[in-house]
Image (tube, rainbow, N blue to C red):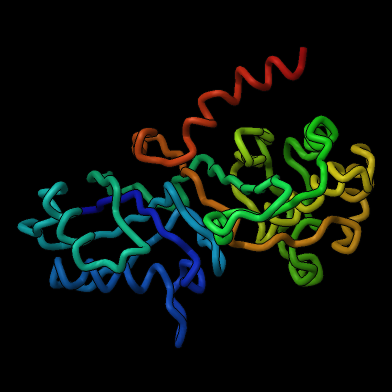
Length: 277
């Protein structure tokens, strides 16, 4: 039988999600905790692997178990038990049984991310590891205009590691929505799409910031996409300001109230409609 769980983690002290030799990973911590409670081997599958330092607010994993009498069938009790032995920087927040056809990665219909900018005259220590600080004035309208050129299915070879393009790996992806949301001291870059290349969101955001600083015109993005040259796009921004926000499925849905930042997303469609008038 299969079970899916929504997990959250502070990526500051992890070397990404995927298990790796000699480095701490989210997968290793979770599998270790699951195996202690379930007393059987557990192999996790994830909606989207995250890099070193990236955080998750609504990441989804699944695993299969063989023991029908396992404690996992009492999900409330199981989540409490697992959380009690997990380290403080990772936790389960929701779970449910899923069909045998379900797969956290391959059944996923879309993924949401947020890249958070702290836009203040002075840095704020509390947000040091959860946002990227910029004090220079940003032209938000120019960034929104620039983002329109990135929507849809395109070849994002210029917005990932050069090795992808050189190795002839597929670099075509689809971005369904980009919203740039100002609230308080933050500017949140919200992305929704089918999937993203390695470093893609961090490079796309770096490119949008070039427009916000009026270093490029919005239409320059068309040329960057066409040339497929990594050097033409913006810098790869730090990982610590990137959050895996949510994953979408036909049979599994994380309650929105369990995902921090979701109050922003409820305003997106209305905000976009106002901005386009």
